[in-house]
Length: 591
Image (cartoon, rainbow, N blue to C red):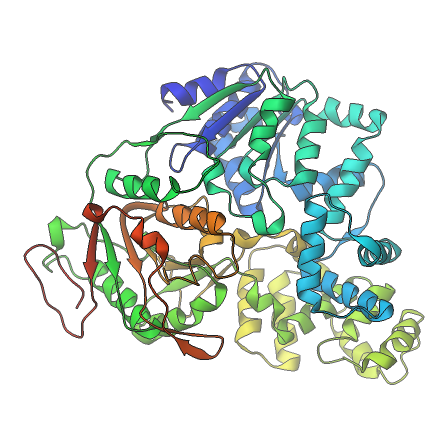
């Protein structure tokens, strides 16, 4: 467990400590060692909270800490900001239920209809989330929406955070929570928003127990109200803090790191951290220019097939043999996965899709989930309304209000079928979640989306537990297996879901103007997103920019991304995927 000198400094400095850590510099490792050092210095593990942004990251952090310290560190709290807030609120007797984004938009839809507000519900909801994440005033609509949540006894993500902050502004409550958590360790600090920063600021007190680590160059959630400039705010709020910079990347070889550094240097307002690669040798970045998104998918699949192929095949530069788990294919938007999946299925290559909640918003899946939530509490008026608004039991809007009131009072009227199904599922709430999904498909038929739900539910405990976890899930927590997936499978994921992960070989596809950078995104944030994608690669990086693709139902010709022009020419090999195998002496081209 040897640490390098700057990791050592971060682990051993007295708090407050702020660590700026680039990709591959051992961020999670440093945080885990910090936690273990505190325990070995006599801090009871139950007094330490290690906070991050996804359940998956929290689980990995916990494993890392227990792997280093074993039983010594048991009782140490690890989790997400949302689960920390939930715990703080529930410990003080506030016990609302957390709703996911889709249920929250349903509530907003009700409120908008009553106020006669026009506009797209989804866009309005996202804008209200951003307004709250930035602490701005939202006007009549936001007030009415928040009032409705409270009336139903519900929290959405932002309310959960703000309610916890409000509670901690009571000195007595704050004293008790600070007494419980003497040390606060925060990972991925560049992703905090205003209520999360306030929470950290409140819990940290004089800062002696504060340790934060992150990388402002990997801040990719500005569209949700996160703000990497809270790093600068720490200088103001904790002037005594020790700042440590981790400068050695153990992940990317020199050519990839140099190219990524060149890209990110085009953003203003940065911490000038000069990263250096631990490994100096490595292949140049390859850039493919396929004719279309289908040609792109075929090129990726064939290239992976070639790299995994028999050891006797002539390899460029003495390549090592690869397994499917060595590869990740990253893309900017969730819908890009569809063509890729087709290509993987056609070639029979094993894959898994990580991130992107898309399928949870499909009508068949929503129908099942609203029923399961109703099953947990058939007397809840909100749940009754939801079960009557989508899925097999849905009614026209005009009838829902009356019918939902009746069924919570036990008067089923014309809804005898709902009652029958409810009886069939009696007792299922505490059985394994995937069994409930299976039973649902036996009654109502299955489709691809419900099969994905079944895969997601596997190994997640009881139905009650699964439904409680779902609203707190973030992009990187979702994972489902592809058809015939084996343990070794290629990972297909959005760039957002890839943050924090690494793979020997990374493809970033769709590097085209309008897609990456996305036409609607902030150019600086899009550049950070591309930087995140590039720096997932441990050995090889392959970029692809298709000459045309179908966007919004029409075929469009998109020029290559401006980011490709920012790459150093001498670090890039340009290739055009062709229809047949051929080899030049300088490089092994596709096919």
